[in-house]
Image (cartoon, rainbow, N blue to C red; front, top):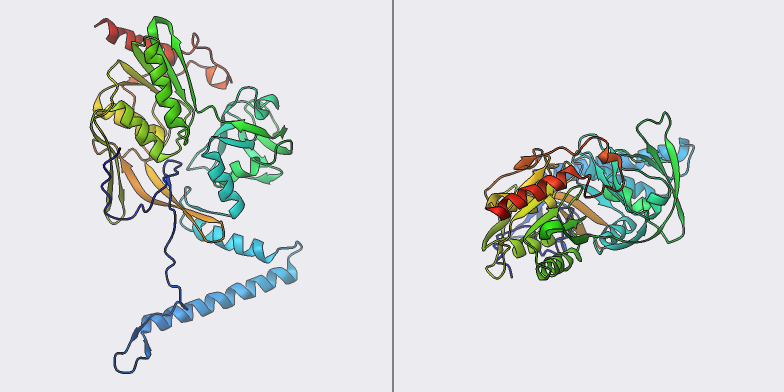
Length: 418
């Protein structure tokens, strides 16, 4: 379906993105020997150690000695108990934290399994959409799923997650925190939240349950305006999205609103496949690595959307949502309505390791078809409309009181009349 122009990195890709978490199916194990640097003499067949290699060996020896000594200090004086596995995990997590990149981290085997589970659209957890401020590390509840465990426990949009089971989580990788809130069906997790208007943090005891993420919801509004809400870009979202368009078309749709508000992103490949259904033939998105390697994704000429189109975005529309909205805006086939998007224009690769753990690392920037990088700036809507005060704190907003949606419908009706 796609014409892929790959000239390097971004590797054998199963593209599981947070937007862009591109999952690599394998990895090259570099330096599989003893790590020394050297050259083989043709005359003697012996290794001639270079000065750089000797220096590297000396630094490694000093580091190993320091590490062993610090461990001995901890074992002798630290009041608590630390296992060797906890030591190793802490070291590996610290290695990625040294990058000072909020999107790069190390996953234990359990954390990685939870990450992969969430992209399938079904998991056991608390049932809530969350987001993280890249600058402050603060994690906020965007929306608890109606009738889900978090909703039943009294969680509200805007609640700040302070602790999970008495462990502070601010600044911790979002996927790791999400995995901590997941667990076996019927078990409890205590999520401590900070809520506006409350003097003290609130402890919410939430009973985990099986969650089927409602990634796509659709309906026909008045005046034959179709409405599709996309919560995340998961594996199941592509077929659900295409089915929604087909069903609304059968019902006589004359215009369409695609709602990406509060959509944190998801799978890179899913966003590209959904845009292939919407765009004419041409460039959809491209990425560039730090060495200039460029990877382009194209839509074919088999399908495109030719009815009036509006796309709703807000400050929580991020990553894959911005890929979708940015391409629609660049091609001029739809009107973006709402507020400035989040501004996450970088791609992370998730690289599985041999023991079931994984490393997530930022590997490239992505650009809209017109060459725009929206990282840390976001996408400006064509029609800017703030959600009316007070509505953002409601778990459920009716279509009638949703002024942003009503503006999008108004834009479409004006186009239909022309």
